[in-house]
Length: 423
Image 1 (tube, rainbow, N blue to C red):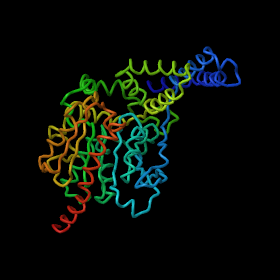
Image 2 (cartoon, rainbow, N blue to C red):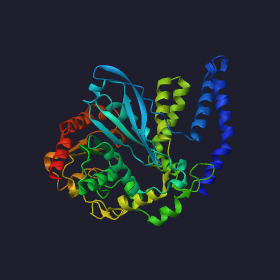
Image 3 (cartoon, rainbow, N blue to C red):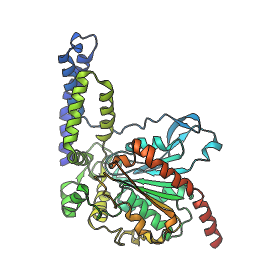
Image 4 (tube, rainbow, N blue to C red):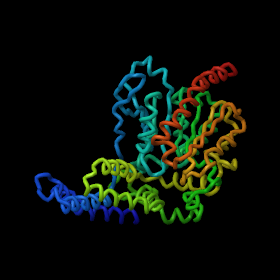
């Protein structure tokens, strides 16, 4: 019923949004003398704020058209190389000579499935492309997945990661950002336990809740402040008709967005007030930056109820992975089995979503991995998003990640040959 009320509200506001956009264009038309006055600019600014505040934001585009790599400017084209019901594996193909491309390590960038779309990592992809052959998991909004596709939970998520990694035949480095650190870590642990020759060359875990008991944040406290039954009864609802996924149980994106906004409400109010003043003053650059950020931030997707509830229970409530109690389809997830995959963890000193030590805990759990194959980096001066995006990531974090990957570029093929001899 909650989702239906939300859709009814969206439909009811549609005429008002259309009218606001029409009047905004009138007030901004340079042929209108009032558009050059404070009153005209103020009216246009108010109408834009209304339209943007009531709009449902759609999935953003990647908007990565070119890259400068190895002294050449090359076109970039995102191509879906594997399509599954809940995820597309997207390859950012660079139009470079094959001999040049082969020198760059392949990277599987596992995007978060935590409300925002994979395009949240646009900056990460853009910064990786000059020196890496990049693939990204593009998770699909659950409201567009028909019920006939079946359920999707944390176990299925891990299945997807294992399938993707196996498809590279061991010739890939995997990088997980935030939420997927747990399923990626679990997937590699399971592959190691099975002696799978297709394990990745290295694994980089960034700002993720491997052990949410350490330095708990407001997000962690929210997840543990209520029983699982409360989440099931209060935040899970059915997708309404006419979406392809109608009647599928989901944790809707608009509820996730309200949580995102509530965490830093004062900052978001201030940002929109600044937008209003920038529009009146004619500061187009500042207004454009605001639109770019919030077009991404306010675009959210629905999550499968099974996945959301299992993640809340396994990762945040019962801490099954660090306690050695996590199972995948009945099989124990044992990180101590990781012996062939070098591991690097990255955290942000000011991270208010994933506390310090939560990601580094992965290194402690890999008791079978020698210290020479472990690395950790704590970045000063960055919060959660700064760990994987922005100037600090580009200039301070990424060089260390790049160095780590290249140091272990031959790791996978060597171990694979050893395994083949043993077999």
